[in-house]
Image (cartoon, rainbow, N blue to C red):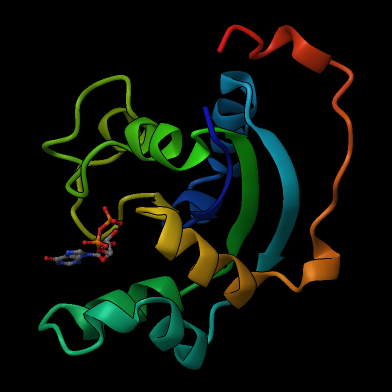
Length: 153
Ligand code: IDP
Protein backbone atom coordinates (compact mmCIF):
# COMPACT_ATOMS: atom_id res chain seq x y z
CA UNK A 1 0.00 0.00 0.00
CA UNK A 2 1.71 3.13 -1.25
CA UNK A 3 1.14 6.53 0.28
CA UNK A 4 0.74 8.84 -2.69
CA UNK A 5 0.09 12.50 -3.44
CA UNK A 6 -2.09 13.59 -6.34
CA UNK A 7 -3.07 16.91 -7.93
CA UNK A 8 -6.77 17.72 -7.96
CA UNK A 9 -8.32 20.73 -9.67
CA UNK A 10 -11.85 21.82 -8.90
CA UNK A 11 -12.47 23.25 -12.36
CA UNK A 12 -14.10 26.60 -13.26
CA UNK A 13 -17.54 25.06 -13.84
CA UNK A 14 -17.59 23.58 -10.33
CA UNK A 15 -16.42 26.86 -8.75
CA UNK A 16 -19.06 28.83 -10.68
CA UNK A 17 -21.73 26.31 -9.63
CA UNK A 18 -20.74 26.78 -5.95
CA UNK A 19 -19.70 23.14 -5.73
CA UNK A 20 -16.13 23.69 -4.51
CA UNK A 21 -16.94 22.94 -0.88
CA UNK A 22 -19.11 19.97 -1.77
CA UNK A 23 -16.34 18.43 -3.86
CA UNK A 24 -13.66 19.20 -1.29
CA UNK A 25 -15.85 17.44 1.27
CA UNK A 26 -16.06 14.34 -0.88
CA UNK A 27 -12.28 14.02 -0.88
CA UNK A 28 -12.08 14.71 2.86
CA UNK A 29 -14.93 12.33 3.63
CA UNK A 30 -13.14 9.60 1.69
CA UNK A 31 -10.26 9.91 4.14
CA UNK A 32 -7.75 11.72 1.96
CA UNK A 33 -5.53 14.26 3.66
CA UNK A 34 -5.29 17.74 2.13
CA UNK A 35 -1.64 18.84 2.13
CA UNK A 36 -1.94 21.81 -0.26
CA UNK A 37 -4.81 24.10 -1.16
CA UNK A 38 -5.19 27.33 -3.15
CA UNK A 39 -7.49 29.23 -5.45
CA UNK A 40 -6.04 30.62 -8.65
CA UNK A 41 -6.78 31.80 -12.14
CA UNK A 42 -5.28 29.48 -14.76
CA UNK A 43 -3.49 31.44 -17.50
CA UNK A 44 -3.11 30.27 -21.10
CA UNK A 45 0.54 29.51 -20.37
CA UNK A 46 -0.32 27.43 -17.31
CA UNK A 47 -3.04 25.61 -19.25
CA UNK A 48 -0.58 24.71 -22.00
CA UNK A 49 1.93 23.41 -19.46
CA UNK A 50 -0.65 21.37 -17.58
CA UNK A 51 -2.35 19.98 -20.66
CA UNK A 52 0.83 19.61 -22.77
CA UNK A 53 -0.34 16.22 -24.07
CA UNK A 54 -3.53 17.81 -25.45
CA UNK A 55 -2.21 21.06 -26.93
CA UNK A 56 -2.21 19.73 -30.49
CA UNK A 57 -5.62 18.07 -30.23
CA UNK A 58 -8.67 19.50 -32.01
CA UNK A 59 -10.51 20.09 -28.73
CA UNK A 60 -7.65 22.04 -27.11
CA UNK A 61 -8.91 25.57 -28.01
CA UNK A 62 -12.17 24.80 -26.24
CA UNK A 63 -10.36 23.20 -23.29
CA UNK A 64 -8.12 26.29 -23.00
CA UNK A 65 -11.14 28.59 -23.10
CA UNK A 66 -12.89 26.53 -20.44
CA UNK A 67 -10.03 26.07 -17.99
CA UNK A 68 -9.07 29.78 -18.16
CA UNK A 69 -12.67 31.06 -17.97
CA UNK A 70 -12.71 31.46 -14.18
CA UNK A 71 -10.82 30.52 -11.05
CA UNK A 72 -10.04 26.96 -10.02
CA UNK A 73 -9.33 25.44 -6.64
CA UNK A 74 -6.13 23.39 -6.71
CA UNK A 75 -5.29 20.90 -4.04
CA UNK A 76 -2.85 18.15 -3.31
CA UNK A 77 -4.42 15.18 -1.60
CA UNK A 78 -2.43 12.50 0.13
CA UNK A 79 -3.41 8.97 1.06
CA UNK A 80 -2.98 5.29 0.34
CA UNK A 81 -3.04 4.87 -3.45
CA UNK A 82 -4.47 8.40 -3.62
CA UNK A 83 -3.95 8.69 -7.38
CA UNK A 84 -6.21 5.79 -8.35
CA UNK A 85 -8.61 6.48 -5.48
CA UNK A 86 -9.22 10.01 -6.80
CA UNK A 87 -9.51 8.82 -10.40
CA UNK A 88 -12.21 6.35 -9.44
CA UNK A 89 -14.04 9.02 -7.41
CA UNK A 90 -14.00 11.33 -10.46
CA UNK A 91 -15.55 8.88 -12.91
CA UNK A 92 -14.90 8.80 -16.63
CA UNK A 93 -14.24 11.92 -18.69
CA UNK A 94 -17.73 12.32 -20.11
CA UNK A 95 -20.27 13.08 -17.39
CA UNK A 96 -23.01 11.51 -19.48
CA UNK A 97 -21.21 8.17 -19.37
CA UNK A 98 -19.89 8.45 -15.83
CA UNK A 99 -21.43 6.14 -13.25
CA UNK A 100 -23.75 7.54 -10.59
CA UNK A 101 -21.82 7.81 -7.35
CA UNK A 102 -18.84 9.36 -9.06
CA UNK A 103 -18.34 13.13 -9.04
CA UNK A 104 -18.80 13.48 -12.79
CA UNK A 105 -21.66 11.00 -12.75
CA UNK A 106 -23.46 12.81 -9.95
CA UNK A 107 -22.94 16.42 -11.03
CA UNK A 108 -22.28 16.63 -14.76
CA UNK A 109 -23.60 15.94 -18.24
CA UNK A 110 -20.65 17.31 -20.21
CA UNK A 111 -17.44 15.84 -21.61
CA UNK A 112 -15.64 19.16 -21.30
CA UNK A 113 -17.20 20.79 -18.24
CA UNK A 114 -16.54 17.82 -16.04
CA UNK A 115 -15.88 19.52 -12.70
CA UNK A 116 -12.59 17.97 -11.62
CA UNK A 117 -9.10 17.07 -12.73
CA UNK A 118 -7.05 14.37 -11.05
CA UNK A 119 -3.57 13.18 -12.02
CA UNK A 120 -3.89 10.00 -14.07
CA UNK A 121 -0.80 8.21 -12.76
CA UNK A 122 2.34 8.59 -10.65
CA UNK A 123 4.32 10.26 -13.46
CA UNK A 124 1.52 12.76 -14.07
CA UNK A 125 1.23 13.53 -10.36
CA UNK A 126 4.99 14.11 -10.09
CA UNK A 127 4.86 16.45 -13.08
CA UNK A 128 1.63 18.29 -12.23
CA UNK A 129 2.03 19.00 -8.50
CA UNK A 130 5.05 21.31 -9.02
CA UNK A 131 3.18 23.15 -11.79
CA UNK A 132 0.67 24.36 -9.21
CA UNK A 133 2.55 24.24 -5.89
CA UNK A 134 5.99 25.32 -4.76
CA UNK A 135 7.53 22.82 -2.30
CA UNK A 136 7.03 25.27 0.58
CA UNK A 137 3.30 25.52 -0.20
CA UNK A 138 2.80 21.86 0.70
CA UNK A 139 2.46 21.02 4.37
CA UNK A 140 3.38 17.92 6.31
CA UNK A 141 1.40 17.16 9.44
CA UNK A 142 0.15 14.33 11.57
CA UNK A 143 -3.59 13.80 11.34
CA UNK A 144 -5.39 13.54 14.66
CA UNK A 145 -7.27 10.61 13.14
CA UNK A 146 -4.00 8.72 13.28
CA UNK A 147 -4.50 5.16 12.11
CA UNK A 148 -8.30 5.27 12.17
CA UNK A 149 -8.56 5.97 8.45
CA UNK A 150 -6.33 3.22 7.09
CA UNK A 151 -4.36 0.83 9.24
CA UNK A 152 -5.40 -2.56 7.90
CA UNK A 153 -2.98 -2.89 5.00
P1 IDP B 1 -9.51 13.32 -17.89
O1 IDP B 1 -9.69 14.70 -17.28
O2 IDP B 1 -10.71 12.43 -17.63
O3 IDP B 1 -8.20 12.67 -17.49
P2 IDP B 1 -8.37 13.88 -20.52
O4 IDP B 1 -8.54 12.97 -21.70
O5 IDP B 1 -7.01 13.96 -19.92
O6 IDP B 1 -9.50 13.51 -19.47
O7 IDP B 1 -8.80 15.33 -21.03
C1 IDP B 1 -8.51 16.48 -20.27
C2 IDP B 1 -9.73 17.37 -20.23
O8 IDP B 1 -9.99 17.89 -21.55
C3 IDP B 1 -11.04 16.66 -19.85
O9 IDP B 1 -11.19 16.51 -18.45
C4 IDP B 1 -12.08 17.57 -20.46
O10 IDP B 1 -12.31 18.73 -19.66
C5 IDP B 1 -11.39 17.99 -21.75
N1 IDP B 1 -11.72 17.10 -22.88
C6 IDP B 1 -11.26 15.85 -23.11
N2 IDP B 1 -11.74 15.35 -24.26
C7 IDP B 1 -12.53 16.31 -24.79
C8 IDP B 1 -13.31 16.40 -26.00
O11 IDP B 1 -13.35 15.48 -26.81
N3 IDP B 1 -13.99 17.56 -26.17
C9 IDP B 1 -13.93 18.60 -25.29
N4 IDP B 1 -13.21 18.56 -24.16
C10 IDP B 1 -12.52 17.43 -23.90
